[in-house]
Image (cartoon, rainbow, N blue to C red; front, side):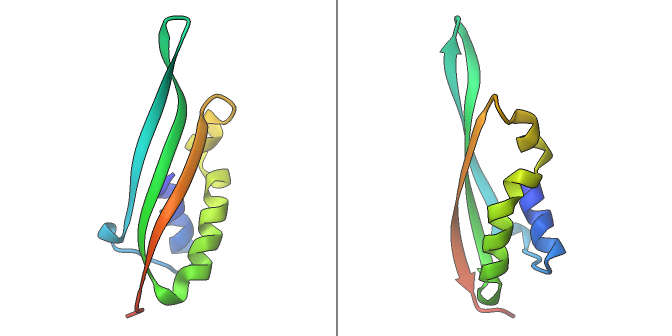
Length: 92
């Protein structure tokens, strides 16, 4: 999903340096019938964005999961949630 988000930002004219866009991801397994099964993925995005791009970033965040091939593949079997820590910096 990070790649989908980054692509959505670039299409909208917001290019972030590699150290300005990261994700911390946690998978949650539950035991079903004696087997560990992935049931949830929790994503925390950490973004450092130009202050004048906040509206664009918020819009991309709100839509990126619906455009992500991996999220579409897992839909219905793995619950995916995300949140974002966003730091705004002065535009260069």
